[in-house]
Amino acid sequence: MGLWAEHVVPRVTDLALGTPDVRALRERALAPARGDVVELGFGSGPTLPLYPAAVTSVRAVEPSAVARRLAAERVAAASVPVTFVGLDGADLDLPDAAADTVVSTFSLCTIPDADRTLREVRRVLRPGGQLLFLEHGLSPDPRTARWQHRLDGLQQRLFAGCHLVRPIDELVRRAGLNVTSLEHDRLRGPGPMSYLYLGVATP
Ligand SMILES: C[S@@+](CC[C@H](N)C(=O)[O-])C[C@H]1O[C@@H](n2cnc3c(N)ncnc32)[C@H](O)[C@@H]1O
Image (tube, rainbow, N blue to C red; front, side, top):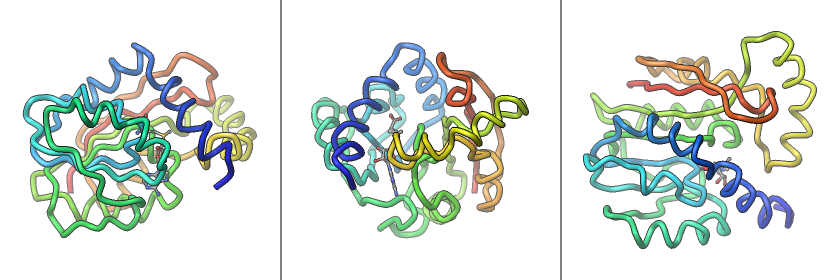
């Protein structure tokens, strides 16, 4: 990984996705979380202060050492145990049915093998468990989608593999998960980066 992706992107992400608007969206996405949580692409841990009291533990998957360092204060302040359990959402070092909740906020855009990751999500969710996702992705508006396709390569180079054109709900369904709730919202900022998928899926 280059210096930019390793040192700059995690810090830019921490700032860009640390706004009050995004915090409010995260709170909405995380409200149903409970029990043992597995969080994919934990980043600098912005979700940690927002988990509801029904959460009992968080196991975090995060390949970036810089992001894990940026998360240290939030991890130390967390009211539940937080452990780092691996580096790749596509290859979870967890037994089957290990989680009540899997969380992904702004991570399915970046995890290289999203299909395999979502199959892992289905495997590690207990019966009755839930995947909670808040992601940006492909817009249904043809004009925005054209710009997303044009800019996708540049976005991946600038933001450590972040894709603009992933149809998040389709990916979730393709892994055999049932999408039980799905809303769309927008981030402030450039249209190609702003179309959001906020949803819940069950195994
Ligand atoms: C855009 S950031 C989002 C971070 C955080 N979830 C948030 O909401 O701010 C994407 C995160 O996915 C992580 N990531 C990249 N590849 C991954 C993989 N294979 N498995 C799990 N996480 C990965 C990145 O290191 C980064 O922290």
